Image (cartoon, rainbow, N blue to C red; front, side):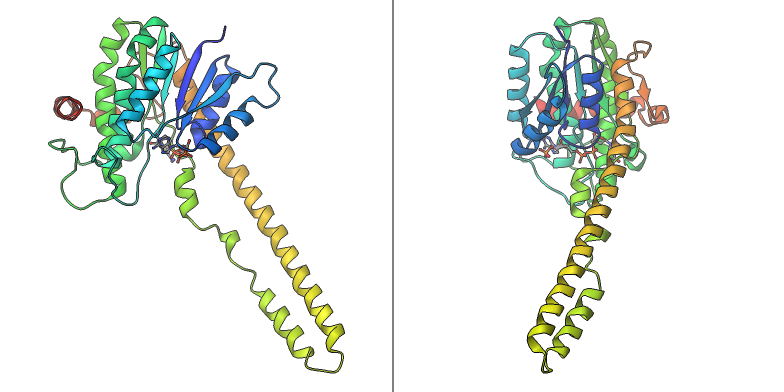
Length: 316
Ligand SMILES: NC(=O)c1ccc[n+]([C@@H]2O[C@H](COP(=O)([O-])OP(=O)(O)OC[C@H]3O[C@@H](n4cnc5c(N)ncnc54)[C@H](OP(=O)(O)O)[C@@H]3O)[C@@H](O)[C@H]2O)c1
């Protein structure tokens, strides 16, 4: 029987590539995301061509604390869990509030993985030796380490707000690494470096989406000629010209999109290697930070104390 692994935010980006790597490493993998269509497609793609389909999708919006608890209950009811990859998180351009009325970046980057891990501890301990990989980020370097409230003071700046939440999350992870180890669970953090955020990518117009400028000229020329006697023939010709121009543009656009997609996939696969190493390298010590050991210096005893206190206050 394959050991069981869960990858949150595993239906796209580096999470998806991590799931693929874990399948190759012999795990049965559950990928978690919000969108059922995307999730089912991801699970099907992960299983494609495999003799034994070992990937599946579970839907949960991890910004909702109730949905996190429900996910944990579903997974726990299925028995021992060998690996949890807390990959959900990101940088948000605008401030947003979760269904629980909490600042969204703090929830998705810290409270949600904190809660999911806590709620899965028994299932993880039952599979000991087991592992938790907490994905982290160099956005921590932009953090202002004030943890008096969930909401950071001052104006909203996406990177700094995410970095602060990620710092809280890393401080928590390192804080619990020791106690978890006593239960046979090794917690390792991993910074995948620069990957392709699918959400951000969707908000950024691709250069390939800009219309080819020549198409208008081709249509104008055809229209002027239609004023002459051979109107019908010219109309047919101008339609063909426009159609050919459109076809050429569509081919170019498709080619550009394919190239961009290949580059994204390669970047995500590289980023996933860091996470997969954190998940599978038996030599790693509890509390190791794979990919960005320099982030450790931001986790001071004061930060750890403040994060512990704030997290417990909010989650009580
Ligand atoms: N991108 C980078 O350059 C970078 C750099 C360093 C660290 N990281 C870290 O890597 C991790 C992944 O980040 P990413 O930028 O690669 O993300 P991403 O590609 O944008 O992640 C997309 C995945 O997140 C899922 N997702 C988003 N919101 C969710 C929610 N509320 N509940 C459940 N699933 C949700 C999506 O599912 P749906 O499609 O169903 O919404 C999809 O599976 C984060 O922890 C981030 O901090 C990223």
